[in-house]
Every structure is written in C-alpha cells, then in structure tokens.
Image (cartoon, rainbow, N blue to C red; front, side):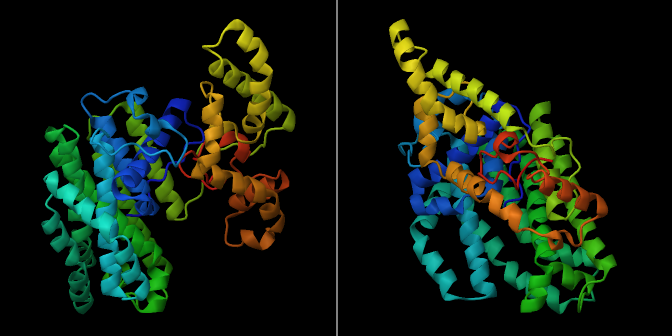
Length: 441
C-alpha cells in the first residue's frame, strides 16, 4: 500500500492526536511482536487508517487506558507479549500490511526482476508466511486473493495489446480490478473480525474504491518514470499517450484520480461513523490527495507567523509544571517539595524544544522514554537541520509555483518558517516526526 492516509494533525485536539499515535504505534508494535522487528519497516499509513476505521466501527471499543502498557508507551523498543490479547483490529492490520507488501514484491518481481527484490522476499519470507497463516485462520481467502493479485501482470499485458481499441474507462477498469477487488476483500474481512458483520458489504465497497484510488494515483505519479523506463502505465495506455502528455491529458488523469477520491469519501459518509471521525477521515483523505495532485494548501489550520521565543518559554514552563504535577501526584507533601524543582529542571528542555510530545498528563518517565522513540528522533533531527535547510534554499526553489504560493513561501523564508507555523510549537505529527512537511493545512 502507499502512504495516502498519512495523518496531518497539527491543529487537532490532544485526544485526536493521541488516538492516532496509539493506532500507529499499535500496528507497528504488533508487527514487531507477532512477526519480528524486520516487519516493522513495512508499516503502512493506509493500514493504520484501516485500524482506526475498524476501531471507530467496533460495537464497544475499549478505552485507550485499557490497552497493553507496551502499546501505550512512547518507547519503540517496548513490545507487547504476543499472547492473543492484542486488539483484533491491530492484529488484522499488521497481517494485512505484510500480505499486501508480499503482493507488491511479487508484482515488482514480475515487472522487473532483480536481486534486490529476491533478497527482500527471502529476508521477509518468515513474516510473510506467518501473516498469511494468520489471515487464513481468520477466514480470509488468502489463496483466492493471491490468484487475483497475480493476475495483474496478465491484465496489463492484455490492456497494452488492446490500447486504442477499448474505451479508456473500460481499459482502466480492467487493470484496476485486482487491486480494487483485493482491497475490498481485506476491508470486508476487517469488518467481520471487528464484530460488525452487518457492515461487510459497505466495507467491501469502500475497499474497492480505495484500492482503485491507490492504483490510479500510483499511475498518475509514476507516469513520467514509467515512460522513461518503458514500463506499463495505465493512464498512458488508456489515454493513448505516446510522448510527453499534453496539458489536457494530464488534466484527464488528475480528474479521474480526484473522482476516485470523491467516491472513497462518499463511501466513508455511508458508514455509521461519528461526525468527528467522519470529518477527520474525509479531511485527511482530501488533504493528502490534494497534495499528491499538486493542489495548493488552502485550509485554516496553518499559521504563517512563528511564535516568539518569549511565548515559547512561557508555554514550555506551563507544560513542564504540568509534568511536575502529573509525576508527583501520588507523592507525599514533603516529597513534592523536595522533588518538584528536580522534575521541573529535567522536564523543561523537552517542553521547550519538543512541546507537542509533552502533554498535560505526561509523566517525567514517559517524557524521557521519548529518547527511545523513532518518531521523536526523526523530529529532533529535523529540528537540528532546519536552520541549515532554509538557509540553503534559494529563489530557484519557487519556480513553477503560483504567485500566491511564491508569496507564502517568501514570507515563510523571511520568518524562518515553512508556512505552517513554527514546527516546534504548532505541529503534532506524532505519527512520523515529519513536522514541517505535514501540517494539516
């Protein structure tokens, strides 16, 4: 799968950010606990979205506090015991992640055999096998799915041979079918395992549209690369593109991708989701799809004015004091008097430099558990290189942008920011650490 449903949650409430983190870390740690650490490299934003969706549809979803302590920990090395007590949504999303990754490797082997692909398939062979066994034990038709996905290469060859003799929509429907139908089967199985057999048809329909969107978006983004390498591309074949696509052809590709996105949103709206969850998922879809299609950022979530150091220091002090309160809540009065200054001093650096990781209920131990969190490490690295990155960028980076976009970028560079506010203080990208690049604007 591709990372279309990457969460961009800078402006979301703390509860929404924490729910996303628990889903992301939950799938990642379930991968590690059940299938080995190497499988965690295959974590997919789209399968995390599936886990979030299944949780939102569960008849009686357990509160976050009831999750395994290791799942709630910021420490990436803290893995839960694989004893069958992990939530089914996480176990299913982890197994589906590996199954889809195996299918992608097989497809790459068919398209362009290489030692790298063969080595990756060998290295991940055990996790792939265990994931397939788990899916089969849960009633997922793994063999039928494999046969369906394996038909992709043959369909593409037949489509290339029929180019110009079939309408564009018919040809696209032929090559999209394996990904769409396979994704539909997985989404439907997820609904059944989450305790909602009544929603299987709706989830299957959603999965089919989501799989279609993923395939078309991949073809849209890879058009130039496929042309250069001489590989099959659904849009070039369906639209009869023989050289560089014309503006009208590019627009036709984008329109079809956008329509697929609208269909996904319509199927989400047909599910019994709360208004907040529906808005969250649809906005995430639209924001990411607009960015991938090259649309400008128009939301109200961005703030182009970076916060002053004085404001940052004040907010850091408030956060650090909250850490003191949470850490010493169960201590005696004398212990609070003696330990409060120490906890405050230790909490202040994190509260100042990485405020989005220090919430009102964060304890000191959990805060310093961030040192073993890979997402935190990624954000820390970006914070360290941010001054050098902006200093190195020149006016030539703005070529091709609209006048409005160029003005926003110029203002961001003048203020030392990126157009989405101060990364340290306005982004809450707890799922990836890529703060500056993922404001939900």
